[in-house]
Length: 444
Image 1: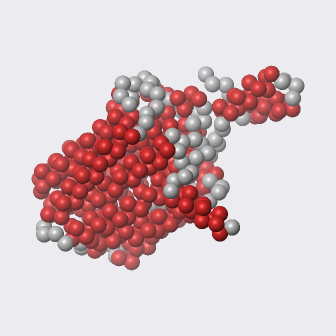
Image 2: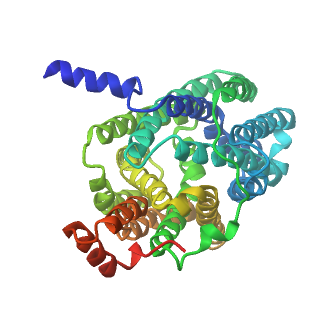
Image 3: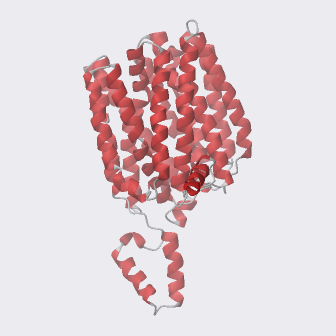
């Protein structure tokens, strides 16, 4: 029994659950997150240091959130001409150029925050488009949750170590020299990732029909997933840059931001490991409402002020509960795309639609913060809107709970078999089920 348990642990850590292509994709994504972890956490702190204003942060993150879905749309136009690994490499090059420009701009970066944010968003968008399409192609519905658990585990691992290392480097360097060193290390990691990307395979190329991802009338469940994603983006668009700034205000040093990333990453790592050991993955979708409500409640502690103990409570709760929201949302989204042959073939259109929804949510969150700061300026306004947006996942969980996955490809296969033996009980059951469930209609 002990040996079997140990074998399960080894299979998890050495990715034996996944195909070779999936393991390569996990490795590439881990490198990408390591590069972002070194620098992305501190970009907003850097812009604050050189300008001492929240306006560059709002412009940078607002245009970043616009750039990502815009890149997905560009990829849609290019998809029938260019392979996914090539699109991924374009994203890596764009992100590398961003960090090179950031290094050259120095203190002037705050005056070009909007353009820098757009460039960073376009680079990430090209990368994430290729990653989502590739992850869909190299997994199935029965292995998709495993893929996201393993990928989340390793990205959490590097996501907690790299900010900690970067914080130490910056804190122990004179003035802004540490930032230049960290941005340079990130550039090097992306060069390695660029070389690694040539090992990735690509799926079939097709002309993109953008309307396919927005045909909500044909699939009400996709409409639910879409609005759940918009709500998810509301919180993410603000929390992605507000929390590191609040931690910096509290600790007064970049090392404090790195320490925060380290111990919250450890908690997230344990959470991903726990989910990976669970056998009833469908339970996560139904259970999603509980951690969503808890996350909203813990976000309200931010109203008590920017204090170390408050940020500790908030950080620990978020790191523990966030995977219980992120994994079911991602898995349900991809399962919904994989529901039928038609949606599976048009996977790129659905990913573009999803990213547009996420971008709408993120940009809306940044705009809400901007409006709030015009009424309640300073940290008070930031804490107020952050506590309200903390409940955005509750809306997402309500939509996701109503999604009912139906394996239409399996049903069509059984239908063709039953057509050859129409007098069997199974055929009658299929007809009865088809009448009761309007979602089991023939594909048009």
